[in-house]
Length: 248
Ligand SMILES: Cc1cc2nc3c(=O)[nH]c(=O)nc-3n(C[C@H](O)[C@H](O)[C@H](O)COP(=O)(O)O)c2cc1C
Image (cartoon, rainbow, N blue to C red; front, side, top):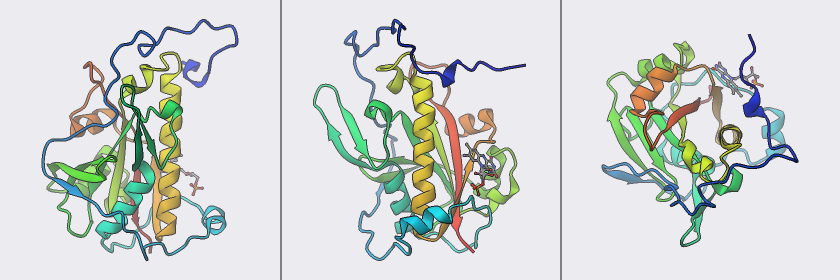
């Protein structure tokens, strides 16, 4: 049986577009999720951290990496990849706001959120964290007693994930995109997620860390770990993950 393929399509030249909430002057949703709790502000001083800045070499040798050395990831290395995947370089506007980040997004809506499970990061207790790209800070969402098992469990039991330093989990807050692009919001959201993960592949390679994009995960387990769902006004859903670790 064929699935619904309409998400792949853009507008036709004669399509009458749905009037967006933005045009109806409905208030813009927040561009950043804020978590209560103690925020750890990360460094943006990345001097000396890059081991390979040869882009051609990085792209020629790019591959998905599923074996990790077991060495702990340094906090500044985590800060570096968080910044180069979802850091906010500027907040534009007064009434209608937009963020400019290290990754592109359709209409600068940036409808994704970054979480991660820290398995083996120097100075961080094992747990689920949320990254705020505006403050460049992380907040512990919940402690996890056995984060490696938890990470592998939500990633459909893929065992290699137990060895990663960090499992990144990206969610989508669809309304951020729907507010402007009601007809193609979901297509744009998923394209955005691809850009974000590719930034991680490139940034990771530059500090000799390996990445594997993860599309095979259990939706129910991931969403319940993050305590998010699609049934609320402020709905949010897990859309993509990536395992990340120090290379052997
Ligand atoms: C959207 C997406 C989902 C993926 N999901 C998984 C996954 O769940 N498990 C896995 O081991 N690899 C996953 N991968 C990695 C691919 O298997 C990998 O990119 C592909 O085999 C090509 O290998 P390469 O990246 O080393 O060139 C995924 C990659 C993408 C882009």
